[in-house]
Length: 138
Image 1 (cartoon, rainbow, N blue to C red):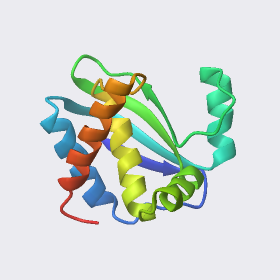
Image 2 (cartoon, one colour):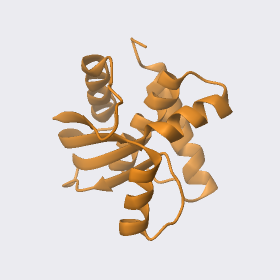
Image 3 (tube, rainbow, N blue to C red):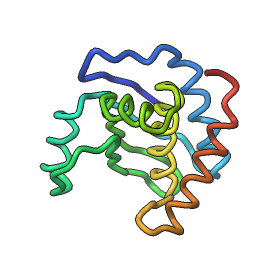
């Protein structure tokens, strides 16, 4: 089950569509949907998590905590809507498109994709783009 929460004033407008899309991406990756929680927050909230749990002192758009059991995906995905908004402007895309990219980025991490090397990052971008093109809503 996919759940959405907010630690700031952000509200996901098309929750049902996004949940269905996430489920279809998980299935297409040969995985099963378990308990997945998304938490939308601001920069400072995510910075605190980054410092506390990952020992990184930088702003980021997403942090995922993977509790998956084999192919059954479980995890917590924290997304800074401040970073998403800034990145959308930088990349000249809509806030919604950038948000969906970050949401599916977190799901792909739970599916086992990494992005530390340039080769891994290239595969992650390819998978993100495939997932984004599979949306039947926006």
